[in-house]
Image 1 (cartoon, rainbow, N blue to C red):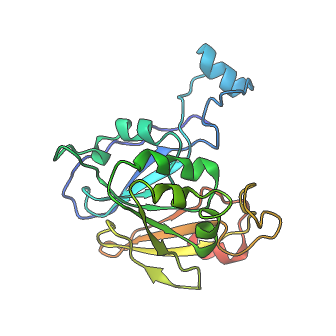
Image 2: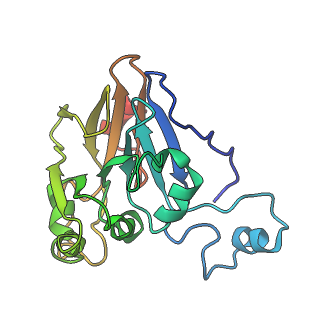
Length: 229
């Protein structure tokens, strides 16, 4: 993990344009990683490295500054919510700014945080067919959540140029792009990769034309990704 500029906090602004909050930018295990004593992790603990602790990778995106789409649900989700008040606007006794969750893959560091959302309403979860399969078999979090808040699953299409909308993404347009990757270690098809095990996402503001390409599991720049870079 390398030091970087702290993302600017955004709260309920009414500016009608896409807003992006980097909730976490570290790999699985966070920074510092609990069992790691590399120069970076050790230096941060000892205060000899000019850097900040980072939670595991996740972003939140909004088209109106009020409703937010969560990309991945990190094990650090509760700390990320505390650090970004827009996700807990406190408009009622029970409240959240998170309207839906998009899973980019089924990795542990991108899905465990779903369990932290179990006290709310049914979760609006977007993921590919392959991720849904893993989340109902090898790591059946969707089944577990069914006994608590429940899950409303929305299929992410990975066919070429297949744009779709996401609940809470006012004025935003989403396009998923399949990435070369293995499924998580727990997956029944770990050694038999399928399209949709891991995706990148193009998020476009239909009002301004501005766009973002988010791919936390990107392993290499494949030819079909060049137009999005």
